[in-house]
Length: 464
Image (cartoon, rainbow, N blue to C red):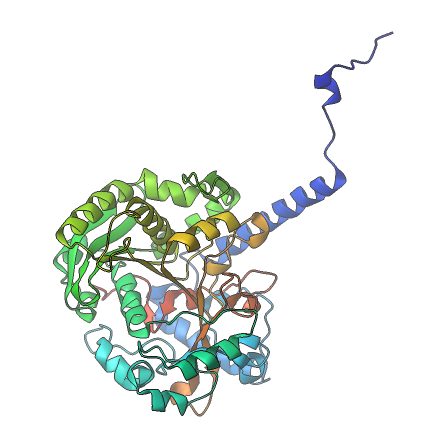
C-alpha cells in the first residue's frame, strides 16, 4: 500500500478557495464584457466615425429629441450610444449631486459640434472667449459674486469670499479645490487637438490650420513612431514660459487595438521609483513610453530646452492614450529634475492636463503622481467611454483632480445646451462626477470622447 507523502512540498499544495475562484471568474467576465463592448464601439466601421460627421450629428439630434421628451435619461448602455453626443436632460441632471451643489464654471454655449470658420479651422481663442468664457475668467470680483453662489471663477485674483463659498459647496470633508486656469486649460485642449495633424512636417513648421489657434508656440521636436503609431511633439511656449510636451491619442482608425489589449489591462508593472515600491502601472502604457522613440527623444529634448530656458516650468498634455503618456512623461521629468532649481527658487514646476485619459495605475501610483506633480487637471466629458477603463475592480485608480465637462439640456441657453465644468473632489474617483454617469462602472459614449472644451480631438479631412 502506498503511503501518502507528508513532505512540506506536498502539504503546501492547496486547492484554491471558493472565494478566490469566484473572484477570478468575475474578473474574467468583466474583461470579456469590456472586450465585447470596446470591439463594438471602437471599431472604425462604427457610425460615430469622424468621416461620417453629418450622419452622426443627425443621429445625435434625433436621439436627444427622443431621449429628452420623457424628461429623464436612462443610464443603461445601448449599442447606439457611441454615436450619440450626450446632453443630459434637466431632470436627469438634478440627480447628479456634483452638478447640483458645485463648484462649477460655465462655458460658452455651443450646439452640437464646435462652430468652424469657412476654411474648416476652429475659431481663435479670443473669438470663443468673447462668447462668454472671457467674462468668466477675466471678469471682476464683483461680477463673479453676482453669479451663482456655487460658481467659482478662474481668475488669478480670486477673492477670499469666493474661496469660502467654494469650500462650503464642496463640503467640509473635501478641501477647497485649487484654482483652475481656464484660459490655459482651453489652450491646452487646442494643443492636444493639434497633435492629431498627420503631417509632421507641418507640425514642425507650426504651419497647420489648427496651429494658427496657438500663435507663438515654438516647436522643438516632433516624433512620429511608425512602429507604435505614436505622434507627439515638444516645444516652448513663451506666454507660459513653459516647456510643453503634447501626446496624441490613438488614431481613430486603430482604436480597435484598445479592445485587443483588454486582456492584458492589469496593474502588473512596478513603477521604477524606490520610495513607492507598491506603485503599479499598466505595462502596456509604460512600454509605449519606454519601448518607442518617445522616451529617448523627449528626454534629450527636455534637457536641451531646460538649458536654453532656465527656470521654465513643464506642461504635459495629452488626449485619450496620450493622456496616459503625458502622465508618465511628466512624472519622469519631474523626478529627474526634482533637484534642479526653477525660476521661483525651487524644483521644476510640473503641470499636467489630460482629456479623456484612461486609468494608468493603482492607488500607490496615484499617491506617487500626486506627491510630485504640482498641478494636475484630468478632464472628462459627459459619458466618455475611455476614462471608465480599465475598471477599478481590476486594481486601477485615477489621479486627481477631475474636471467633469457636462452638457445639460436648457431651452433658454444658446443652442439649447448649457455647458459647465464641474470641479470634482481630490480623490481622483469622485463618485458624484463622471463615475456617476457610468452604468455598472462603464460609460459607453465615443462621441463624447471626440470633443473636449469645444475642440475636435481627432483627425479630420481639413485638419492640416
